Amino acid sequence: MSIRLRVTQWRNVGRFCVERAADYGELVGVELEETRRRLVRELSALVALAAAGLFTLSFVCIAGIATAWGTSYFLPVVWGVAAMWLVVSIVSLLIVRAQKPGQSLHVLQTELRSDLDTLREALK
Image (tube, rainbow, N blue to C red; front, side):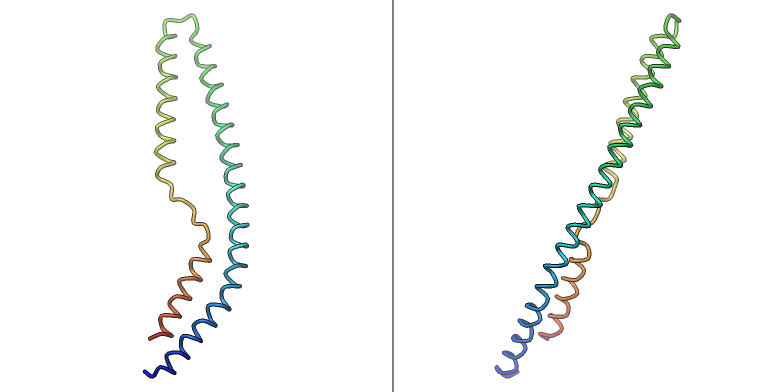
């Protein structure tokens, strides 16, 4: 290839990158706002779910212990409630660790990969 052709290719690549930089800026803003909204929504739902679940399980446990109060089953019921809480905690930990993290800025990553492929093809 001649030097002139190579310079023209690089100039075209430079123009392409400059044009796309403005698009990337807009896309980053849009994706950050969408990610923030999704994160706030998911965290709010998780907090509400956790609070409701804990209150429900707490009152069920208190009811079970109160029912066994004064019987010969009192200590086994108390230890059973403690064991149930331990199992719930372990299961919750396993579920949280098994979840796939959400993908933020997915559209921007896709666009960048596409543009890099385009640039590679242009420079061949």
